[in-house]
Length: 90
Image (cartoon, rainbow, N blue to C red; front, side, top):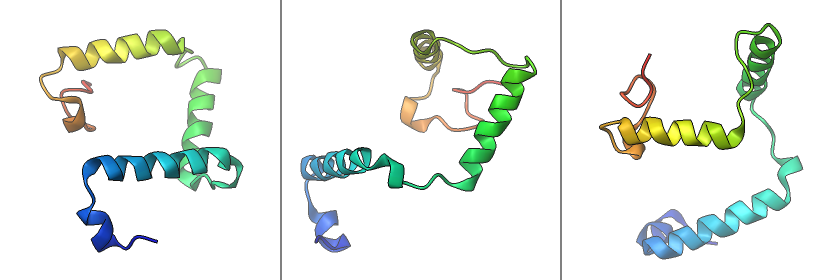
């Protein structure tokens, strides 16, 4: 097993290979990954807003198109976007 010093010393490509392997392993066993309590609360809030009509369902392809359009109009690179930034107006 790699320790943090060894991991720090790896080239980026090797780090990405490790990330891919970890992600694939986790994806194969997703039922054993616990959801944090905040995630369940947010899902329930979203469901409630949907049920009372304050939000509507959007097709995933359309949602991706709209998000890409928002990012393209933004001055900031995508990796600099955060809550309260120009990437998320309002």
